[in-house]
Picture 1 (cartoon, rainbow, N blue to C red):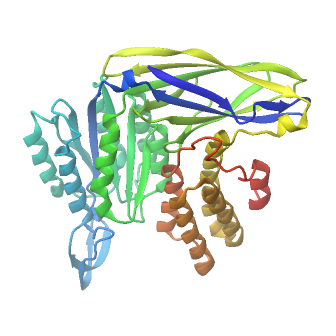
Picture 2 (picture 1 turned 90 degrees about the horizontal axis):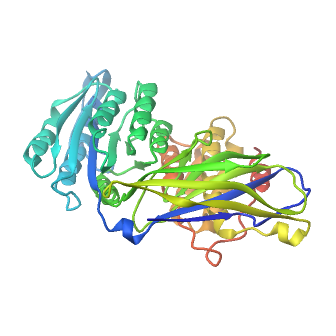
Picture 3 (picture 1 turned 135 degrees about the vertical axis):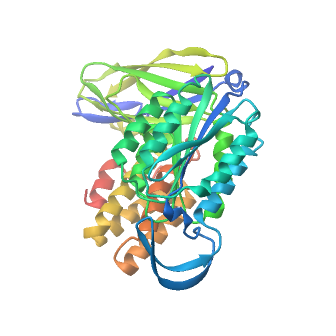
Length: 457
């Protein structure tokens, strides 16, 4: 019920050429048989109800009236406004989730709020308990306080734990910087054990984008940054549709290497980026959508070898079909590479694999540029130029435009604003592209050594 493809970025490595890198693409796609059964969905909506959620919604122009300074939940304001708040949009989006055609009567929904504290406002079946769930949505405006996100995520873990036969998803929405980041990461670990992915939605310019990226990565989910809250209902609708297509879950990959070969990194490269722990055995790959090819990149260090055809590793894959309550496995796959003394053969690379490797590299370059921007804006601009050029060659127009705007901002102001930083850092992880194969993949992307030379790393 699962098709698997393994392909190295170089079918030939140089014999007696010293230690070398080998990047391996692992592409997984559920079969049509696995995709026929829609899994039951268990959804946790974890919504920030802190005081700042009553500020104007980004992207919507409010009518502002200046006032004497006043304090709400420890934050000072000097104006009132007439218009829709961030919480108004979040409430509307939650209501639309409950009314979505993607939701079936036997799906379960837990509505969870967090500020200084967290509570499960309502929970139950989308059909039988719909009225109670909608009433819970209306109660969200009653809460206010600070930003303690960890208890909200722990509540989500407890709510989703019993639903082993369902595809489990957390929609996490926040506009603030959590004061309990360690607890958030601990809760994400619990959710990962339950095979529950976090779709993290960051609003505004105060939230910690690195935390949201880490929480999404730990659970094989996806982070979003959006400048216009009017986009929130559609994002939730799209992600809810994706949740109904999570037909395969708990994908585990055992990588058994031979002597002098080491797995040093593992990354999900498409449909979005997520970092895996290469020291974890087996690797936890999360869930897979029907009709979607999910691509991972495994990075190996390979010691020098003479001219020989060698098996470097064996890859074993197991998975769970929630709707069928069936655990399956893929026949173990040997990773074979030939070591050659012929320069032309050793120089050949597979452009499809390199396309995914370079998308991973774009993410690393963007993170490096945002760090460099603080103390060395000139070098940061060079790093952004390399990243933008790579996205152009890969055909990723959305990221090319976003990085171009960041470059202009850096040159004009000598820095990168908080909003732009969040957009490009999370965009590099969310806006990856499927590589269509040799005919569609550019071959003039820079090598690892080129990147180090051009960016000063």
